[in-house]
Length: 302
Length: 229
Image 1 (cartoon, rainbow over the protein chains, first blue to last red):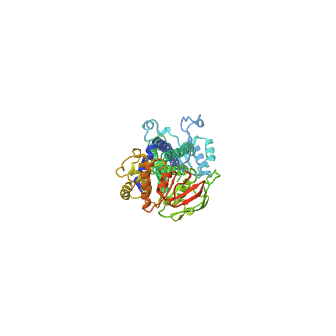
Image 2: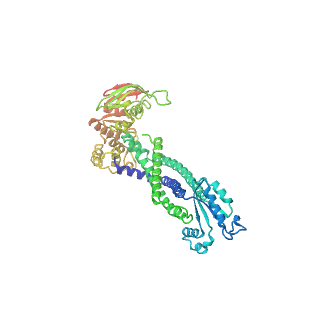
Image 3: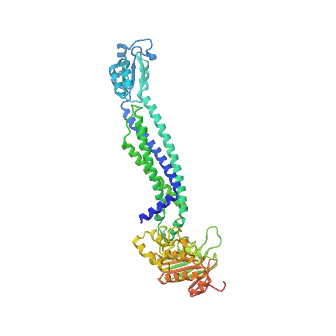
């Protein structure tokens, strides 16, 4: 096998079909970048949901003085009796795993920890603005409904929030984004396959003299087909590299940028990005090789 | 070397066979003219030898191999033992003489050292020494055909098939081409040449196989083209 001979043939082929090659590269790059983004969203959602699965809780916030919530209108802060009744009620429910009481000072500290970067916010809010709360950890986060309903109707409760519902809204959005990215990626892959088919056909037509002579003098099928498949492979690789750059940009700009909007998210690591990049590049090259091979069978008689 | 036993070939969508129960033997080192009008089956014969086509019936042996039992995978190896020359030369226009000849060796993976040694020898054998760096469009038709012959012969094939090699060349130049073919034949290579050129056949006095409508109508050693033409 004469490697430099093959490579010079490949180079000639790529140069002759420059516009088609560029089209293949761009299509593969976009398709693989979108596939990668879909996978990255998946990884992000996966790591977030496992991070949150043992932390989700139902929180019952209690009325404080001059509470604006509808349930607390026309009455003062929660009384010790009401608080005690609530505690007993919550602990008596079969769905409940544990319950913690959080007083105003504790709530304020938690608030400070979460918004440590936001000085304006911190300077306005004081400890007496924070509501007391019961933080209820459920045995199964999916069975929040009875607990949620009971707590909502109890006197002294201003408002009940369920982390699960909040997260589900967020995860739902992420899943829709992922699906959209994957659908466009599939369309791009389809376009890439057609483009590669066309490129190979053009290339086979341009080089019909050479391949005719190669057949005549007894070049093996591999030797005749390899330059064509290599053209596809190189286009796929270049597309893969471009998509890798796009994915790294996406990690820095979109995924890391998201941290400043959602305090609740976990960081998407570089190792996950590297995995996604490896996978998308392999997929891109494989698609190119297979598409070249299949069209070669049609347009190149050996 | 080439053995046809009752070979019939009918192309798809054609009623009349291109070759009709043809049996012929060509021995090692022979020089055979294949003559006959257009459509008489000369080219089909050559294509069958190369396994470009398959016969509908009958057996073909080339260089000791039964072509029916030769897997597609091994066809390239068969073709390496057969050189081919055509009426239209089939040179690569963007490669010079040396590169055109070297191409035949490069694509079968011969080492570069070997190519550098062998190609100039063959270029000289066909009488093109000093023109190795000319491009095909700088050569006359006869010279281009010599390049094609050098390319066909450079891998020292056992058989050389020539399909009307003088078809595009004037009679004076044709004599030179025939001399090269004769020289190649003298190295022990079997030569089968399909031709219309009566003058050449008559002057060479070699074996003549005449085809008409796919049938062999004459097989004559030291023959001439025939009275009919």
